[in-house]
Amino acid sequence: MRVVKRDGTVVQFSDEKIRRGIVLAADASQVQGINSVVQMNRICDQLLGDPVHVDSIGDTVERVLMNSGWLEVAKCFVQYRSQKRAGEARRLVSRNGCGIA
Image 1 (spheres, rainbow, N blue to C red):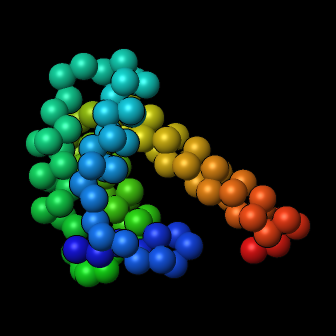
Image 2: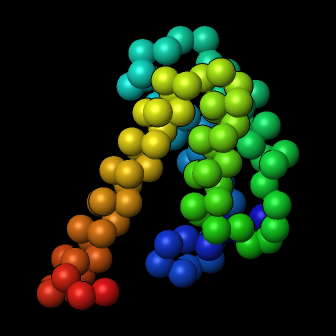
């Protein structure tokens, strides 16, 4: 499966990136017992299309976490995604030098 990143580039799907986000969110929410492999399988089962947009993957992760009862982890994952988008925006401004995309 291929993934369309926010900048339009297409890369090969890496479940490790999703697993890392889930683990970081679980750590941030101080929730123990979440099995990122089980959640990853649920997420991959719901991903449709090739290529799939990175935001669709993130939306699916949030939905699976919420539907699985991991509400605090889902909340932290939303914050994680928001921080990643903010970092991408800062890099874009820095790269362009003027803040105009």
